[in-house]
Structures are given as C-alpha cells and as structure tokens.
Image 1: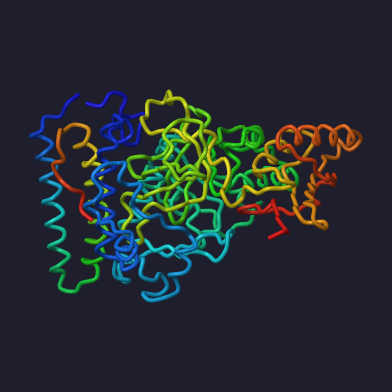
Image 2: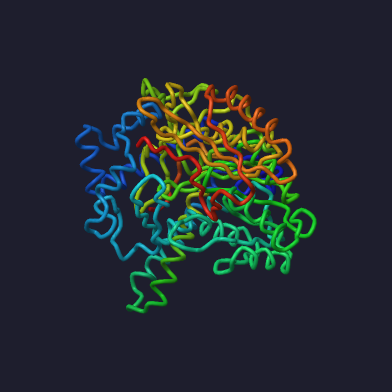
Length: 444
Length: 70
C-alpha cells in the first residue's frame, strides 16, 4: 500500500503531503495546549494572562499568539512542589518514571520528567532517526557514554532497541576499553558527541595502535550533543578517521529528539514534523519566517510530550529553512546546515558579530592542526581582545609560520576579525569526553 | 494507494477497544503491582499506535476519525 515503505520508519507520517501534515500539527498543537491548560497551573496562568485559550487556536497562524516559554522561566519555577519540577508538571508525581536534567552548560540545569508514555515517545523518535540514517536490525550498536542524568544517548539506546538493533552498552568502561570492546564484538555503529568521536580516534591510534578506519567495523556514527557533524570540516575529519558515514542529530532534553540528517546528507537536517512543530522567529521583528535561507530563532513544540509539555519553547538556537526538498522523499522540511548558532552564543567582538562555529570550520579545515582549539575573549582596557590557541601536529612544526599565516587569513575572511594566535604542541589543550567548552567569553 | 475508510475505522475502533480493555485491566488490577505496571507500559505503547494511526487517518481520510489518547 505504501510503495518503498521499507525506506522509512513511518512511511505515512514521513511522506504526508504538506497540507495534511499541517492539519495534523494543528490538531496535535490544540490537544497538547488543552492538556497543559487543564493540568498545569503554570500553563493555565500563562495563557490566561495572555488572554488566550486553546479554543482560540483555529489556524497555524494563530499559534504565534500563544506565549513562549524560555529556559530561564523553567529554572525559576522548578525546585518547588511538586518537587523538583514545580507547577509545570502535568501528571501526578508517581506517574513520572524517568528523571533527566540538562547539561548545565548555559546555567543551572533544568529538570525533565517523563512518564512511560513519554519515554516510548523518545524511543519512537529515535527509531525514526536511526532508521533514516541506515540503522537496521542487523546493526550491532555500541553506546560509549556514561548513562548518567543527561538524556544524551539513553533515548538512542532505547530507539535502537525498538528498531531491532542489538545494543551494546559501554557505560562504565574507559575509552581504551570501549574501543577494544567495539573491536571484539565487531560493532557496526555507535553514537557520541563529535568531540568524543574525534577523541576516541585519537586514543585508538596513540594508545592502542589501532586505525579505526582499518581495524574496526564501524559503518555509521550518529552524533549529537554539540555542533560538529554539520560543520563540513569536522564531519570530514570524523568520516576520514573512522572510515564511516557520520550523521547529525539535534535534540534537547527539554524539547525532545526533533531532527535528523538522513542518508542523502542534503546539507541540513529534517525536522520530525509529525512529532514536532518548529517555527522560525525573526530575531528583530518577532515575525514567523517561512522563506528559506533567512536565519531566525527556533521556537519549538513537542506535540506528544505530556509530563512536562514543551509548548512554543524558545530554544535560542538559530536556524534557517533549506531552499530545496530532499531527494530522500520525505516531506519533512530541512533546516539548512543544522543549528548555525545560538542567540546567546552569537556575540559581538570588536563590534563584529561572531558565531563560534565559524572558528571551528576554519581550524578543522587546516590539516596541520589538531581537532582541539581554545578561544578566549576578554577586555584589555576598553577594547575587546580575542585569542586563539591551536595545536600543531609534530610533522608540521617546521611549517608553523605558513600554517599560522593561513589560519590568520582564513579567519579574517570567515569572521572579519583578527586573533592573537598561538600554536602549541599536541596534547597541550584540554580534552573533553562529552561536550566541549572551547569558547570562553571572560567579559561576562 | 487508498485504504477504504471502513478498514481504517475498523483499525481505529480496534485500538480504542484495546485501550479500553487494558485500561479496565489496570483499573481492576486488585492492587497487583505486576498487572498495574505492565498495563501502564502497554498503554504507553498503545499511545504510539494511536499516534501513528492518527497520521494514517490524516493521510487517507478526509476527516479525523479518532483521537490519540493522552
């Protein structure tokens, strides 16, 4: 009944014509808004103060009238009864079966409750992500992460299981032991942050005398947790190091698993529009952007998440719609190049707007430099100062001057800024296992 | 490709029936934790079915036949 149904996890949802997809989204938005209105003191107060009720939402355009929620607001209401979630919680506390929290890179962590049903929803979303990236029941998927309070790859684990993969948990092991286990069981896939993907490859070569591309059986890698897999130079480094295809996924603890890069690798990620509503808001005017190639802030709604609903959450992520459809056949829209910045990361240095990922793209496009770098912005008197530390591979040390000159020029072209650049030996800079913090703004 | 509306209605009715029967089992579990816990998990999976069926209704039907349970 659905031609080529085996190309998609859910060929119905993933190929719905746009007008039907929007009809479904509208129906679901009204349902989750009604749910939140009926079950959460926070949401009812928010909507009543805005003079809006769920029945007022009759078209997609009406959705923009619903007030947004920011992470800072979530922090303020949590820590109170029903402890620790506060009155954003929409279910009795004894229906919460999963506790997670955000990573805390932008401040106090936000607590995230999920019911059994919400957790099934996480698994459903991740199953669709992994299927789109070529995972099949024949895959043996290794999970090299700590299985701690961050949702990270827990949902990837359960999604892979739902899909029918064999999942090998590599929680307690150190990096060398994980690599050896991946080799021993002939794992075909794994999931990690881009930082750790590159770190593992480094350790494999230096400490185990293993070439991941030659000696391990990895065919696909799913990255999440930080930008990287959609920065071309970083993606290239990962794919070359592992001899595997690398795919991006962007999600968040407080939102869900909302996007994926498919096997066509179209230069962007699909929004899982059957489960999420993504709006792009013009940062200056607040208008909702429909046209491609115009960046704005992502406002996102998780259409089926009930314990702590995510309704018009202001993610602060900067994205833009792609100007092309994807050849994979999905009608889920693409965001171009992934998350291209964060509204609170994009900063002005010497009067120039700077997106930290632009620096990564330049550093990692220069083969003489290692994967690690560090940027520090500070004030010297009244003037901004930006310095960049990079690591030079030993074989390139006799070309330091030329490498530095190339780095300076390419950074100037890409970011319109001049940096105080210093080259350091390998292993001088910090290594990170999970999310890296390479950009430090000391002016804040 | 077009599923007759009658077949779709039958699917939806069947899912609603399953939900009702499992819910009844949960409500009348005699306080037996094993029954309560497993029925709760089944209902979570039933919601996923309902959610996917809702998409099928949207694709195939001209009107929304059923509602995914909350």
